[in-house]
Length: 257
Image (cartoon, rainbow, N blue to C red; front, side):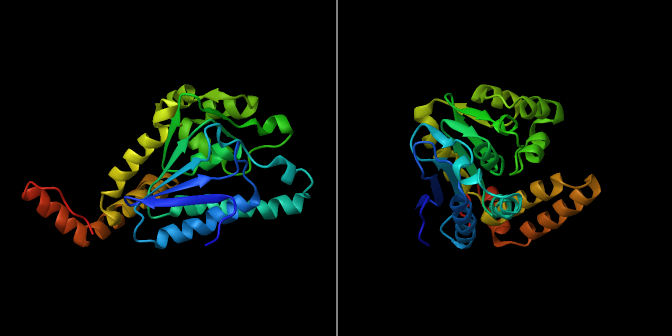
């Protein structure tokens, strides 16, 4: 697949995807089209067992949507294009492999929403997050009002969304938005260390774990427990379960297939 605004590499079972419109990597509709297609490709690629998404350069993960591209669109056109970004984010959430956002520099608006669609987020000490859409006379349109409040709680989300102010990586960590804050020069290495560890897990168990957590979060407890039971049953029927338990009994490292 030929890519114009993304690039990626595969090493040690990890696909590292770069948003490639430096220096600030603004997200345009081509970004979302390529992201959507790439998620399909990586899901099918048996070499890939974990994914990292990061920004090219050290100034920005993605400093928001491409406002110059958006500003002259009609209401109908923006809603049609918004289906593209929504579809890309939903494919990320449904991807059978874990995704780590390695957030370098600015992650504003659509950039913050992109990080929200990932399973885990590691950011640098220099990272700045924000949902500044209110200052442009609009609101987040890529899941910011919904995924963010589910993650940090409604009161904290309202404060950040209503004021549209920028906040630090440390504040994001305190809110439970990010998993870890690291020095800027350690960011990609830390993300790759996590991704390689995840790539060593059972791909079937990881797929079922992600499905159980994500699907269960959006329903009532009884239904969520039914989802968990079904996913657990699928893992128990797999060859990886047999290998994992046999390795435990034999006190050796499991080799999952």
